[in-house]
Image 1 (tube, rainbow, N blue to C red):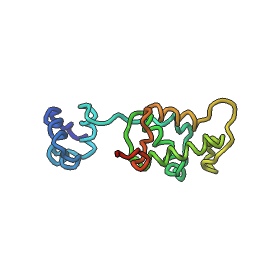
Image 2 (cartoon, rainbow, N blue to C red):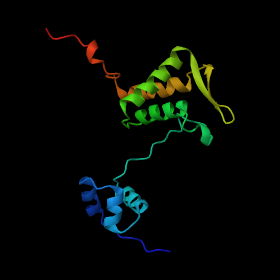
Image 3 (tube, helix red, strand yellow):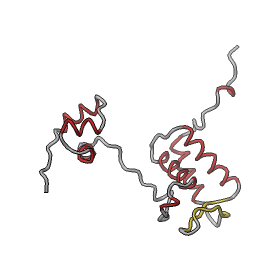
Length: 154
């Protein structure tokens, strides 16, 4: 078993503020990038892990984990948990979820089949729930109005 590297947390914090990459930090402290990630977690410098289990309550086959529905659900879940994602990814996920909700559809998953759309059964659908949580986190200012929709100054 190797020795436990000592990484000064205050020095680590300063170097992170200066913008050093994990690879640069690893070289500086003589540890692996994994060691830097552990040290950053211990120092409270890493973003908390997101939990997508509410949005994706199934054990996904590897073949389906990067599919459109899985990606859209993860993106909506990320937003609901306060994480910023690129606008184009957010807009894609919102349009997808809005289309399903407007059509009275929900999403289902079967390991052999993958994701498929199903009619909403009694109660609120998974898509409605995930979409509502994302919209709550976004607040009332989303989606932003397109500049061409704004009244012109005269």
